[in-house]
Structures are given as structure tokens and as C-alpha cells.
Length: 101
Image (tube, rainbow, N blue to C red):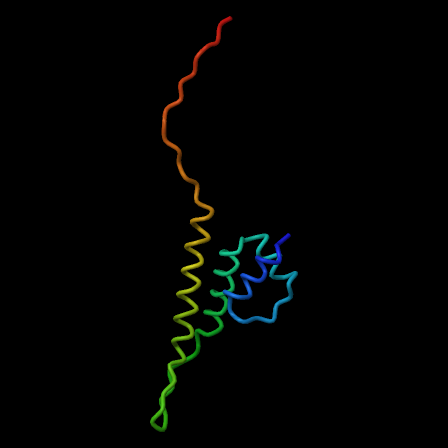
């Protein structure tokens, strides 16, 4: 079960969303906080992939920047989630012996 602090962190750092706490909690339980953030930002990047830059009447709006930033944040949180789940190899030697009494 996700903690209240984890849900708040997801709402603070993730894209604005109308999801219920139970849905977000399940996502945190399955992927962890950083994994959930990566998933949500990747979903936002997918949703904004069709936005294009608009220039008209002397003004311009860089709408593609929304997609690029969401993709960048998804990659960042994916890297953090992967680092959390990485297995660190332990090096060293082990010596086995026999105990006699």
C-alpha cells in the first residue's frame, strides 16, 4: 500500500492528472515512485506527440516543447527507477573451513 507521502510526491512531481488515489497507489506499489513518475511522464509525452509549433500573426507558440520536456522527464525518472532496482555485484573472496572440536 502506497504511503500518503509517496502519493503526494507523485502528485507534486508528476504531470497534472485527475487519477484517483487508489489508481496512483497501485501504480506506486507496482513500479515504485520513480517508476510511476516515468510511466506518467511517458504517457504525457505520448499524449502530446502530435502538438506542433505554431507561428501566426507575428506570434509563435512552441508546442513541441511540451512533448520534448515530458519525454526528457520520463527518461530521467526511468533512469532513477532503474538505478533503484539495479543489482550491485559484490566482489571479494570467501573461505570455507571445517570446524573441529
